[in-house]
Image (cartoon, rainbow, N blue to C red; front, side, top):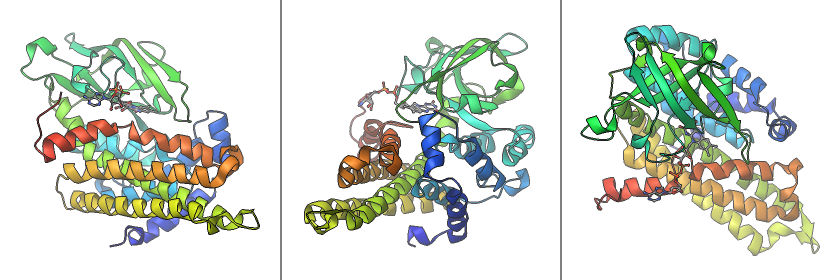
Length: 385
Ligand SMILES: Cc1cc2nc3c(=O)[nH]c(=O)nc-3n(C[C@H](O)[C@H](O)[C@H](O)COP(=O)(O)OP(=O)(O)OC[C@H]3O[C@@H](n4cnc5c(N)ncnc54)[C@H](O)[C@@H]3O)c2cc1C
């Protein structure tokens, strides 16, 4: 089915909600590095951030395709879901691997907005993409796990109550594989910030509320460990297909925004007594960006369908993330070039969206790491690292 024809009611509702948050809203947030709180509150109130939480825990119990439609429409409207998208996929770790007690305690409050689960602490300054070599430790002292170490790029930590944290519970020297000995914790940061947890914002080229976290003897109760001890890497991996698919949907939304913007401008802007879009040198790149977006969208649709059928579409999720992030960046370049000098002016939103779209070839996973996955796991080429 044409991707744009699925979840029409949701797309329509998101489009209406986003129309309340216009260019000047996003420009102000961007200029002042402000968290788009009113937008996130509206999404939460509308039940959109809890779309994937099962009904029995207070959510809407919708499929990943609904989540993808929500995020795509936000980006297509000119907004940015980066302020809150993590809630959709980090929640899955609790849902799949948490105990019944943890699910009943946290998911209804996350669904209602009473608790915000926006922060996901995996990346560290020294380990980067090599997650299994992370250095943050959690050692049991007989009562609590005591966490020491540092995370980097933990986005939205200042705007979240809960943090999903990956830390080493068994030293690397005591495990057969480096991926063993890591555990996942659901940390309630509210009582810890300013004491054993320090949050330091990182200023970036776009407004993303990202931070560094420093843990100094931070206590976490054993009941806040998700699943089995030392098995956390597997739990984080199991959420990656959903994360890649949802990010790919945002990229498709961005690509559509850029193409739409370029298309309109190319028809309106008159230079040398004719619309610039009459020149094939201007219209062909837009047509090319459109064709790349449509092809990437098909891969996204296939990944979403397989996921919703309960399959484990590693190949398709990675392909979708790769192709959609490339399609959005190509559309961004095309839009910027179509606008000429005006593309650099804040009021047209192109430069803001351009800065925002660039992220997705680096995070949440870089293009090289996706290519490496495809080479090794799909094409059976020798492992490179
Ligand atoms: C704005 C922003 C928000 C983020 N939010 C979060 C978050 O909320 N939570 C979180 O845990 N992380 C977050 N991240 C981190 C993000 O996931 C990492 O930046 C990303 O995984 C890449 O890791 P790195 O930056 O350490 O790059 P590195 O691992 O240092 O890699 C640098 C470059 O080298 C390439 N490279 C490295 N190794 C290889 C190899 N073996 N073969 C080929 N190429 C290689 C990479 O592809 C990359 O281009 C965020 C990052 C940014 C910039």
